Image (cartoon, rainbow, N blue to C red; front, top):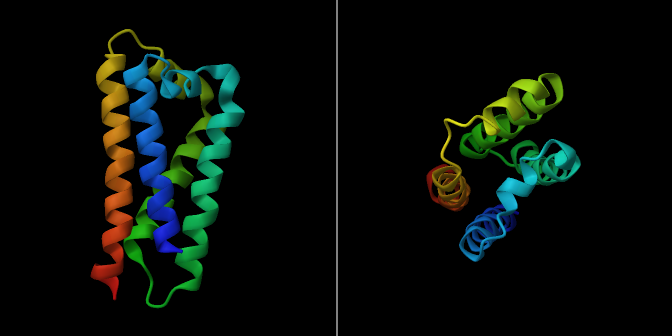
Length: 122
């Protein structure tokens, strides 16, 4: 199951980076207010898979638990205070090109952390 989650992160990071390079930008699509359901659907996929790992593995995989917590916080932020969330993404002070590259690298980093949690935890 950890391999599945790691593969999902790598695939999502690849898609984010590939669409940025090709000029389409999946991240810009997801950060539009009208596409909140797509953003939440992606978050819920990661929440479901990572919560399954956290709640069924012994000993507790604290690396995946921290990543799960970050997904839960982002969903809570989007649901409880969408004006703040979309206000930051629409702020003119943020360079969208660096945001897209950084987002793809963070997702790749999550995939690496999930994959190496097999080594660290076991």
